[in-house]
Amino acid sequence: MSGPSLEIDTLGLLCPLPVLKLRKRMQPLEAGAEVLLLADDPASIVDVPHFCNEQGHTLVDQTEENGAIRFLVRKGG
Image (cartoon, rainbow, N blue to C red; front, side, top):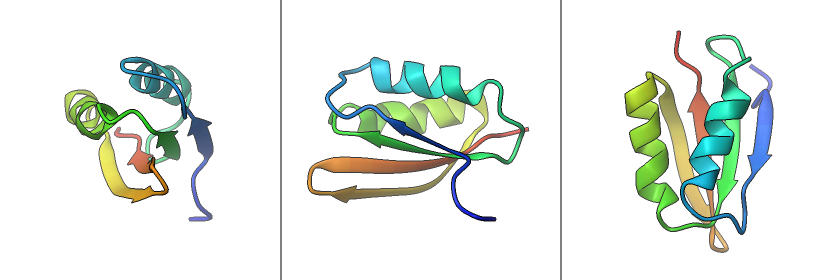
């Protein structure tokens, strides 16, 4: 695979906006598509994994760099 299908920058946005944007932008994607979400809201560390569990998506990777959290999410089938 050649990296994420989509990158969503939610830096500066507070809960629940990062997850709401992630949900909306993932809907039209095919199962298996990967999305990179950038967030800096500390609540996203809890919210994004919870969203993935609830919706059947996979949190492939989560890293933090310079205050920005990068979530790599694979859409479930």
